[in-house]
Image (cartoon, rainbow, N blue to C red; front, side, top):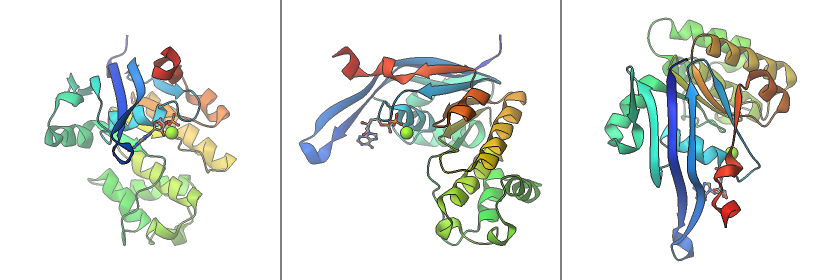
Length: 230
Ligand SMILES: Nc1ncnc2c1ncn2[C@@H]1O[C@H](COP(=O)(O)OP(=O)(O)O)[C@@H](O)[C@H]1O
Ligand SMILES: [Mg+2]
């Protein structure tokens, strides 16, 4: 059996609504699943089910209320919920890449620089150029900051910045939502190549065809909804 790269164990999440008297809204309870090397696990369920929340907890953007999120870092499974922010930052740098739903553009940094910086190291610029070419981002845009790009153009920069990294774990949240069929097919190819290279992928895919093409297993997030049990 392939190595477990991500193990989410008994994870719960609630949001405290500070502007509404501090009421607590439970969103997820007892979430447990694993993702192995070379496997693509898809989070399923309707809008609002908590799919992105799981992704953001694994990425470290949100904090878990309870439970464990273990990732294989330098060969050992380590619980990121029990780490200092500084230790988690080191784990993210080496072990976790993320394609978020929306690009966080950095003012004055060009598309090519943004993707190259995400790659780091020798050859990152060539690889960034090659990814942007594959994703059909017109070369006249490479030297411009993505702030003024269209939704689909920004998304392709975001995809390139995530896929240039060579981490054991890759998180992708609706990467094809505003792409045309040709670029959706490119993303399918990129994901297939990552899987073949042994990357563990946790994904959310709105698009049925993309999901069918890459998914090994679906984790139904509605099974972890506290409202269902109530
Ligand atoms: N930062 C937040 N503050 C308050 N509620 C949130 C926050 N993020 C998500 N939620 C709520 O948590 C629930 C799950 O959201 P989300 O994880 O984005 O679902 P999905 O990705 O499945 O559509 C929704 O009801 C959403 O409104
Ligand atoms: Mg979402």
